[in-house]
Amino acid sequence: MAQAAARHLLVDSEEKCNELKAQIEAGADFAEIAREHSSCPSGRQGGDLGTFGRGMMVPEFDAVVFSAPLNTVQGPVQTQFGYHLLEVTARSE
Image (cartoon, rainbow, N blue to C red):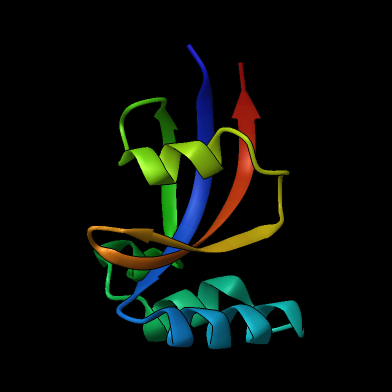
């Protein structure tokens, strides 16, 4: 079964998500940004979600996590929870 490890941050607006993505792409630390801004409890761990399989996250999340290049910030990805930035840190098929 395919497995992935990823980190993310969750905010309530696409505008905020794009603003944080720009900061990360300009060199800001993803984990620090997640700790400061993410509304998800995983933000306390720098957005680390650990390892999970297909179907364990919402479909919009899975679609990105199991197709995006590794170690590249993806998003904004909208789900019922809000807007996410995702970074896949590892994946195995």
